[in-house]
Length: 340
Length: 267
Image (tube, rainbow over all chains, first blue to last red; front, side, top):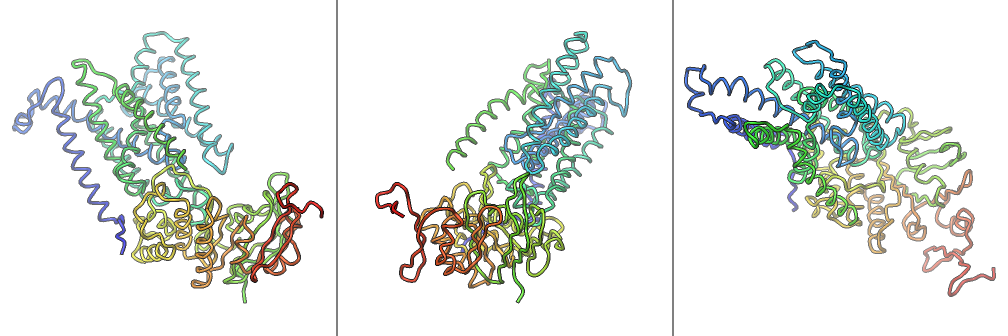
């Protein structure tokens, strides 16, 4: 009698709880490390006005919470987009989010807009609008171009990305260098401490989005396999794709508006998780979210300690790790396809 | 008795090109139909029309006596399943997960399978003799084994009608025979209606009850094995020269070649 390794809801719940426990431990450890090492003893003392407590609660913890949320959002979005585009090399930025955010941020910076909305700067607001609007454009054009496969979407994303990057370059060329420089640094990806309202809102949105995406998991399994097959098995493919796409575009755009462009998290993490835990999205998505959060917390900690007291943009660090990883993946993937 | 599949007056165009014209045929419940014909005659399109993946320009298709336009998505999934050729190795699903996908539309509120779904999947794995591969990655098994896994998935969908698009291409002789034996077993033991597109009319002819020869535009022929081979319809539909013969009660069709060691170029 063959033993089948089946996935059950209980098994999944236990894995997720273990994952969350590991995440919390990682967050605590990482928030103690930094230019100034914080001792737990000082944090637990009744006197919360110590310098350690100040740094911990006002700077490190918000930064690390935000890092974990952004990491989870990007990683989950990457996994979902890889499934609906049926392309293991897709990442959350492939559909124009990065260039859209770039144009938005540059526009705000070049025109010198000054206002505060929901506690956010014009750069962040316009980055969000740019990102979300661009994804929408890519979806509309891509669906018109090729209704039956995801290649239309993918190609449109590539073309729009190039086109909007050119617009960003154009704005850089005509703008004053000082404002442009700070926007460029912002775009490189930075986790800066946010207020608790922003963090709570973002956390709730990410958790709800992830939960909905996990529920779409069985359908995503089929769609990543074959859309035509998914239809004959009784899945409303266009509805699932649209919903999954909308949710990922939304949380990625928010992540980008909060932290700039942090590349490769959405590419590497889903892959690493898939290698270890398999391709079933019901399991892949929650574990990817947790792994993305852990990865980002560690990356952010390294970014702010490696050249201490200066800080590296975390996006630079993830790209430095992600670049070589991507190439290994590409070679491995092409080898696998040659075998068939 | 109601037919499993009734196609009447069916037209289908791909862009400007008319692929199918006034196609008429029926498959009775529990019958095994082979569809053969030259490339581009619309064999795969016909399967897609039967699963409602594409729409005809004219005509009617009924499954189990009911027009397919009256089916909702779930009823359709309960009536007809299809084994396709397309397989991309992009993501590493294992055999068990692949077969379980057939049950997706019936998962519970949380998106998980019931114990009934598990029983169905395990039966399908055993019936197709791939149970021992259950935990293996789909990329790690042979083409023949993978084809059986896809047939297991169609079985697990528990539909009265199963369609297959060239299930034996890329397989060697032994594995081709294995697949046809399996299909025949599904027809006889589970009274499935089987429709398979094939390029190997000699092999499928030994298993199927009827053959639909699909030529270009409005040329087609539906008949039982004897009539298809005896009237030499194969030569006509494929526009090749050849002869049909019988060896030990089994029909075969042999093509004439212009240049071959023992060609019959005198005819």
